[in-house]
Structures are given as structure tokens and as C-alpha cells.
Length: 406
Image 1: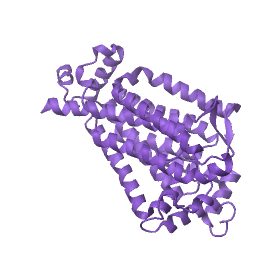
Image 2: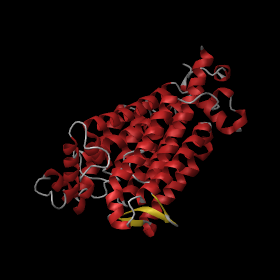
Image 3: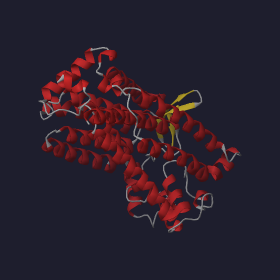
Image 4: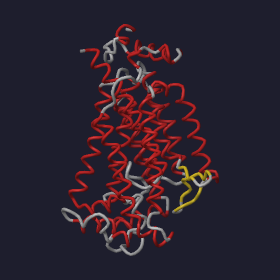
């Protein structure tokens, strides 16, 4: 088995226990003892890197276009949000480059410390240290910077699930070892998100957990049963929460509530419609005058208005390419840990895009969830850049294995 690893070949057909033994040996060994085949020395995926950089740049342009009016009114400076997003973009490119150059196996020793740190930050938001905005305490204030732990929780959960599922490869079909512990940890993170409240992030965490459990080979019956319980919990969380239920009723009757509770999704749908096929042109959208916080969760609506159906189609194609290259990296990863890590990150991007666009199109009720790499916000942009960098690191090792195998 060690000879196969040193040759840089793909995952072998050996029993799961051998894979688990190999991973445990790597965990106990210093980094220098890890075979060369699992060190990030190959070229990164150029298509994946280009898509991420293009999305970051596109996000800066769209944030400026969507926020200039609000920035002028609130801060007397049309470039207020542009300057901040530009700074976040430069920092995210640096994070992307650094993480892509680091062997993803270094995450082994950081898995539990990062998971615990994110859990503490989420708890701080709940117990009174969170900065409130829009009726929710989702941010922690560190000087001039606002950190959103829920964004970190998504990547932290993916890294832990990849680590744990790879270790338990021979017992992943069992309920007490392969299924329940993963559901409990994700459930704890979901509960902390719900307490902020952040229903959208809780849904993303649940979907990520089920996706990775399915990919790892957990019993479908367990996943279906937990999915039913999760759906029932979600319905109860909406029905017995006054503000969520009122928002849901307004979403069902948008025409009647277009001037109050459904104002934001109604204006968002109008933005898409007014863009028609080719859009009104960058900076020429009128909905920036009416759509609240257009540069954050509803930036896709401004894309639809200013760049039209064609612009939205190209944006969706870019995200689809991002997810497909992530899956490609997962299939070519040299071990199960890298495969789960890459697949989980690809799923994280895909799920967030689907939920955000569904909300912007009023297919789903309004919930605060950023559009990856495009919405305004430092926490989301930096975490997604780190995730993309890890994905690039996995892709580099997979490419190395392909060349050596040939």
C-alpha cells in the first residue's frame, strides 16, 4: 500500500481498513514523513483558479454598481462600499494563493482546534457578544472589523466531516459510529445558528452534512429518516416563530404585501424582469434606488437588471463550472480525505448559490445568505477564498497522481 502511495497513484481498491490505517499513520507522523505524492507540488487547476479570480473581480464591480446610491446617501461617498470590498478582494486573493500552496493534509492537526474555535465564536454571538443588525446577532466586532462566525462554520464543518468520514471509512454504515456523531455535531452548529437567528446558514449546514454522508456511503435509510426529522423541525421553526411565519405568509402573497413585508423580494423580482435579455447596462439600473441592501444578499437582482438574462446565465455557468471542477478534483484526489474535502467544498459553493438565487427570484422566502464571491462582505469572501484555495490544493495533488500513473 505504501508503495502505491509513494508512486502517486489514485486511491486503491484495498479494503477501507487499510485506508483508515494509512490516514492514522499520517496523522501520527510529522509532515515531512508524508509521502511526496501527497504534497502539493503539482500545478493547480488553471480553470478553477481563473473562475474564482474572475468571480472575485466581478463581485467588486457589481458591489460598486449596486451600492453607489446607498453609499452616497448614507456616507456621502459613492465609493464607500467599493473601497471596503476592494480591500476584502485583495485580502481574499492573498488567502487564495497561500492556501492553494499549502498541502491540505496540514489540516489534519487543525481540524478540532478550528472546529472548537468556531463553536466558541458562534456561542459568543448567542450569549450576548454578537453585534446586532437587521434583528439578528450574527457578527462579532473586532475593532473596525465585523466577523460572521456562521460563514466560518460551513468550512469548519466540511473539514471536520472529511476528516472524520475518512477515518471511519470501514464503519461509516453504522448508526452509532458512522452516522450519529456527525449529525450531533452539525446539529449543535445548526442550533447555534438558529439562536442568532440565522435560518439560512442552518439549512446549508444540514444539507452539507447529508451530502457528505451520502457520498461517504452512509445508509440511505438513516439519511432519509434524518431528512424527514429535519424537515419537520424546519416547519416547526417557521410556524412557531412569529416573525418567520409572518414573512412566510407575506412571501406566499407578495402582491398583497409588496409595500411592507414582501417589499424586498418583490423589488428583486422586478429587477430581474426589467433587465430583459441584455440588461440596462452597468451602473444604469434603477432598482438600486428601491431595493434595500442591494449589494449584499440581493446582488444577483442587480446583475439581472443591469446585465439581463444573458448576464445571469453567464454567472450561473461560472458557478456550474466552479462546482464541476471541484467534483473533478474530488474524483482525482489521492485519498478519501481529499475526495471528501473537495466534494464538500464544491457542495458548499453549489448549495449557497442555489439558495441565494432562489431567494432573489422569490422561489424561496427571504433569508440572509450571501452569493459566493459576489455579495458584499469580508467574512463570506475570505472564507470562500480559503475554501477555494483548499480545493486548488487538492487539485494539485490529483494532477500529480495522474502524471505519475501515466
